[in-house]
Length: 187
Image 1 (cartoon, helix red, strand yellow):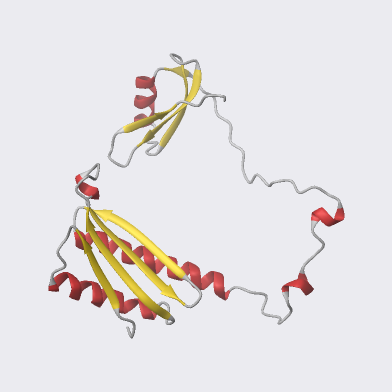
Image 2: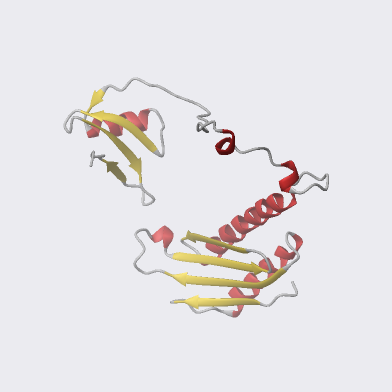
């Protein structure tokens, strides 16, 4: 990579091994995107993280003439955090290149192709709902909802009617493995 990679450590000593590893991996990014002007890697140790698995943080910032891409990943090892961040950066670059490369390809400008907007024609634009899903909610307690969530293998969230609160609640799994409960109120 012709671009110099700036490696910064926060509450972490950047050893020669870490610096070489980062430079080697960052050097591969020019295969994905050639017009990178500046690259910055910030590695940090966050002592106050909720989980020991989130203490090592790797943040990568890549700048070019017309773009700025940033990723951040956490892990229990600085190399694992950096590897996850560089993989995520490669996916972001692919998305960026895809958006930039798409077009009509016929040489016409957008104004020539643009149709009359619905506001100009007097018709209202209705939002499109791609899918509707209904399900039956059985009244249950928070503990029953937690058990039901595990039985159904709903790893992220579970919506239920809370008998104790007489309201619909959302039970969700937090990053640290514990559970959280959302209790909506009408304001």
